[in-house]
Image (tube, rainbow, N blue to C red; front, side):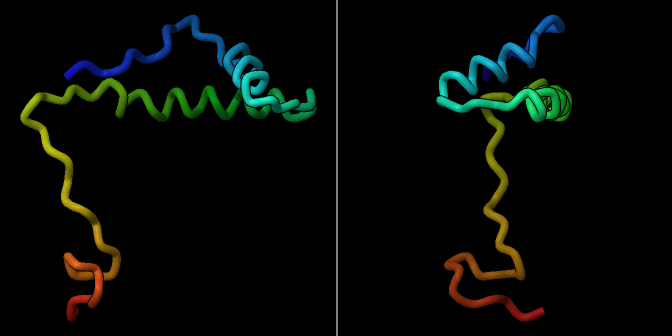
Length: 80
């Protein structure tokens, strides 16, 4: 399976934030724009291990997690 390419080392988060905001019709005040860019830089760094993880054609998704031990049907929690 082909994974999406991570942003190249020269990828510019500031340009991405500006262009995406324009596409969405958002106006980012200069007072917050730097913080948005920093957070996108963090997101890129955090996502890299996931993006770079190689999957094969035989890999399957994990089963559905049911918090509190809910049954497969989701109607009754299981006993502890």
